[in-house]
Image 1 (cartoon, helix red, strand yellow):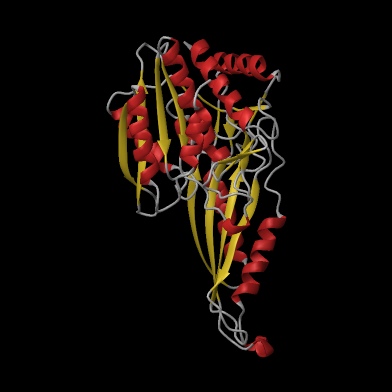
Image 2 (cartoon, rainbow, N blue to C red):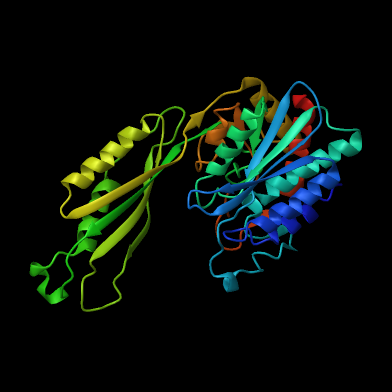
Length: 377
């Protein structure tokens, strides 16, 4: 038995959300170098112009190059005092490991590293295996993955296939392999009005009312019904805020953040045009900003899909389905460089209070990764 649980516990004890991102990368660099990996740390800048780390580690030789990719940053835990156990304690109780980020996705990172350690103990890696980890997946769209891949490929690195360790299974380990994901766009919609007394609203213009009317119209419109490969495109209102702290006045402005997950029925520029048209015809004065967050991707690497299915069925007794449900990830950037499949732990408790993973699932994931590496080469 490997030390996968101990490694997972060590990783989750780091508060790896902005701006505390560098320590966990420094720890993992030392850990991987002790295992025999050649490790490179990147000092990057995220989309908010803040420094953010990245890591590339490689071991083994051979013609084919297998990449495991993921991230070490986490969603900030809310109301830590209300968690059953500390979100950074890594407590194991009744077969569950409780921690923020254990499912998304420090458990998968620990599983892959331990799988490599297991193979080294058996006599060595059967080919060249690398690890690519980012730190801006949760806050800034994972663009550092794209930046690292640009640098690495410019230096001559080539990758044949990638496993991205996102939590792909809805309820049980082995249920689902992701072979694609919807793209995502972010919109910031700012509504302008005139401050005034609520009793005399006829002479004022409430920017919150205008913004809510626009959001209701956007939300009420079905973008599509999906297709054979993708779920329907969706729109989610992620935040709504104003600067108003008074009971007796309307605010001057109100702002909403909106995310649209779109499938391949649409081009991103068409989604942007649709939002722009709705804004231009809405009552009131608005300012619209938008950003393309993650790429849509869909691929069907038949050999690797078959290999992973066989390994999962042998380890778990479950025949997995292949689909595209779930969140968009930076696997979309990786698909421009090599075929990619997403497979990791379960996603039921991702980003929720008392996030936890079954200890047996973490061990099982390590076995699946280990056997896939052996069969791949």
